[in-house]
Length: 139
Image (cartoon, rainbow, N blue to C red; front, side, top):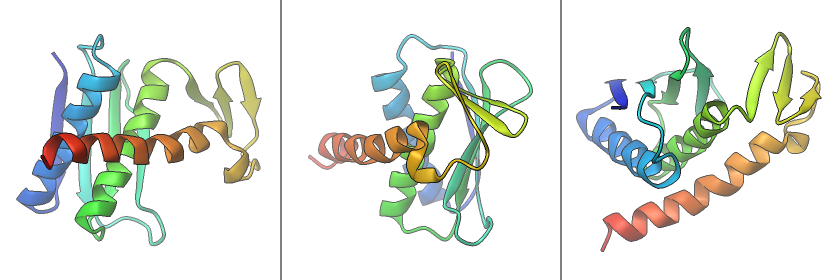
């Protein structure tokens, strides 16, 4: 069974994030049952809204979310980072030192964000997920 731990932020923000994460896993990662996800809602570097990183163990992940986001932006950013989690779980995305492996291609750290296919996928999917989530929860 997947494990989701959320710390920081208000209780309302934690509830919003939990619902979004559970929705995403049920819809996009239904076969994966051993994900350990630690989410921290806190003040992070200015200009950053969130980040997803792999933990020390297989299928262990950390998502950082900015505590300064509106509820709408918090949801959108949560879905963006969940797309990155999906990319890691499915072994589509991994980091090799300063380089990034996307599927079978290696990208340097100097690759502009606009040319990173994993970021383009996350940007596209975050809004699709957000619309699907809102359609289900705002009936």
